[in-house]
Structure formats: C-alpha cells, structure tokens
Length: 364
Ligand code: 13P
Ligand code: 13P
Ligand code: MG
Ligand code: MG
Ligand code: MG
Ligand code: MG
Image (tube, rainbow, N blue to C red; front, side, top):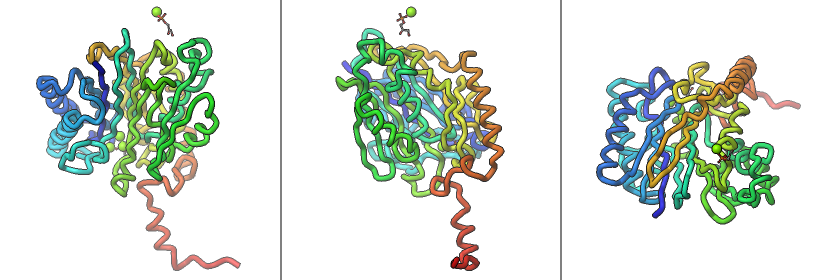
C-alpha cells in the first residue's frame, strides 16, 4: 500500500499586516482536518505556519490530486477565512481565488506539493515552508541537495546516490516543462534554474523513478492576472537510505541565498532559516523565511516533527542574513534590492509612465 504526503498551503489572513497567521485560523483548520481523519480521508496531519502562510501537512492513502483531500484543504481555508473576515485580519482570504471548489485545488490559489511512495522500512520526510518569497527560492537549495557534491557527500561516497537524480523543471511563463538528468545535464539544468522567476524545479526523482522531492510552483499573480501575494512556497523532501541524509538536506540553508518576494513582493533579500516560533517576518515585512520540519512517515502517520532550524549551528546563518538585510536595504528603491520592473507586483511604474508620457521627447 502506498502513502501520499500532501502539503497544501495558503495565506488567508494575518495579524498584523502580512506578519502572522492568527491562531484561530490554525484552530479552525485543525477542526476541519480532524473531521477528515474521522471519515478516513486523511491518515494523519500536522498544521504549521511560516509568517502569514498556513501549511497543512497531510498523509493519506488516496494518491496525488485526490478530490476529497484537496476539498478538505479548501474547506479548511474557506472556513478559516470566515473567521479572518470577522477579525478583519489583513488579507482575509488573500490566496483563495475562487469561492467554489471544482475538483482540484490547483489553480484556485493555494500552493500544492504532493508525493506518493511506497514506504521504506524507515522513511524520513522533510517539509520546508517559506514566507515572503516565490517558488524559485527552492531552486538553489534543492539543486544543492540532489546535485552538488560539495553539499551532499553521499553523491560521491554512497553507491545508492552515485547515479544522481532527475529534475523536472516548469517554465511558469510559457507553461511548459522539461526533465533533465544530473550530473549528465547539470550545466543545462543550471542554465534554466538560475532564472528563478521563470524556471522552477517541480519534482526530483531517483534515476529509477522513485520520488525524492516535490515543490509547490503555483504563481498566484500569473493565475489571477494581478498582484495577490507572492506564492510563498512549500517543499517535501525524502531523506536517508538512497536519498541525501537529513543533514545534507538542511545544509543548503546554511547559506542565506538571495530570493525575490520581500516587501510588497517586490524586493530581493536574503533567506533566513528559522525555527517555527521565529517564523515572524517583521523587519521590512521580512527578511524572507524558511522553516524545516523533520518527520518519520510510518504507516502513513507523521512521527515528529523535529524543528530542523531550531539549532544554534544556524545562528551564524541568521546573523549573516540580518547583516545582508541591512546592506541590501540601503539600496532603497534601487535594483538589485527592488526587483526589475517586470517582476514588480505593486508597481507604480505604469502610472508614472502614463503621467510622464507627454513630457518624453525623442533624442537626436
Ligand atoms: P546512521 O549511521 O546513524 O544511519 O547515520 C548515517 C548518516 O546518514 C549520517 O549522515
Ligand atoms: P505575503 O505574500 O506574505 O502576503 O506578503 C505580501 C506583502 O506585500 C508583504 O510586504
Ligand atoms: Mg499576506
Ligand atoms: Mg506570505
Ligand atoms: Mg504570499
Ligand atoms: Mg546514527
């Protein structure tokens, strides 16, 4: 019998501004998911949040894209949105683009990462949840986990990893996808995924087809046709015994890499790995955060989690991230802190250009 891990996430309102999902919303999601346990739609679940985004981590036997599982998540978010509206929370219902469920939550606003697998004798599964960034923020750490031998020693010294991995990359602008093999096509892969706003790693498999990682890639503004949030992503990663070790899966986050999505979804800033309790993006609405939760999946139950970045060994990363935040903030409205115009979401540029249009003159 196979097990499915589904992570479905949404920002449905926060206190204060875009900072933290209100505990009432988490409680309401808990009630809805508890009902789904009783009716055997789910086998287990854990609810977390990173900043203003609620992450429903669910296990079940129903496979990916299951209508009942997706509807459960949708109902949880809809019900919690009612409370968010009562409390006049900020951005109540922000990530819900439709108020009727139509069979699959994809395309309706929430982000989805799912994987189905046959459990190994022991199956460590890690879940990462972000705020104030975009799906492409996972490109660098996922690449390092599954393709960089300077990060993942196992690629060199563990025969069960030595073959490398396959990467599925989505072109989120042209709605196309491509699968690339590593290490054979590593430079081609990097040529794409270095463009984090366009090419996004969706899945990673072992060469034998076994699923290794899945990432939510929904870009809300592209779906909605306007700015409605920055698609703060989540990822699921399997570790140990043929996959990178847990330690190799958290190691990429020791580097506070630059990501897009800070302040109004329109600024670059350093990723800061934090514990669940520190997932409160406050300074300039950030800097961007990632939390990590380490589970053992056992007969489709979630054992754990361990709060993966609740480790003083990540303190220097957090300090470096805060220092980089100070440095890049001093650029104010200038690139590369501010995103290039085409990536800006709260852009005032079209209005400014319209106002100045008559005053522009042709040059010689
Ligand atoms: P164990 O020997 O405890 O399984 O550890 C192996 C390992 O993967 C350490 O990174
Ligand atoms: P969220 O995408 O987390 O809602 O943040 C939006 C924003 O504009 C923060 O400055
Ligand atoms: Mg928000
Ligand atoms: Mg958010
Ligand atoms: Mg967002
Ligand atoms: Mg040991």
